Image 1 (cartoon, rainbow, N blue to C red):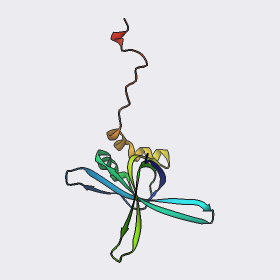
Image 2 (image 1 turned 135 degrees about the vertical axis):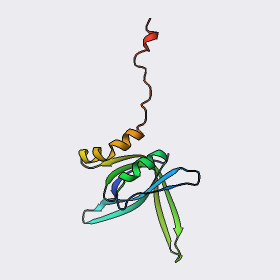
Image 3 (image 1 turned 45 degrees about the vertical axis):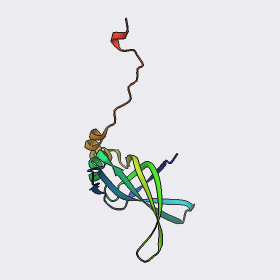
Image 4 (image 1 turned 45 degrees about the horizontal axis):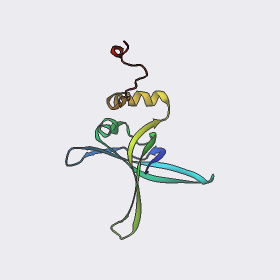
Length: 135
């Protein structure tokens, strides 16, 4: 199972683009503080987050620099070379879910419209049989 959950702050606004087949893709970078080592040595890890589809279209305008959020998704680590031939590691999360953190009123106000558009229907539960079956 490949699942990761991280929380941090956006270090730049999300960018929205479309794939050749028309799928929306929102990409943004998060800074995640790693203060497990020593309290005096705060280190920040930067990861790129990718969000697809209708959620990308609906939420990209709320994904602004400085926003705090939690992301759950699939981890992808790639090792690449830049133009100078130096090797670097790119850490990416393909988001399954996002949660805005911070003041409740601020978060609610900014995401209410997007949440309505992107709400996932609850699975049907049959705690009581349908009315026509109660005979």
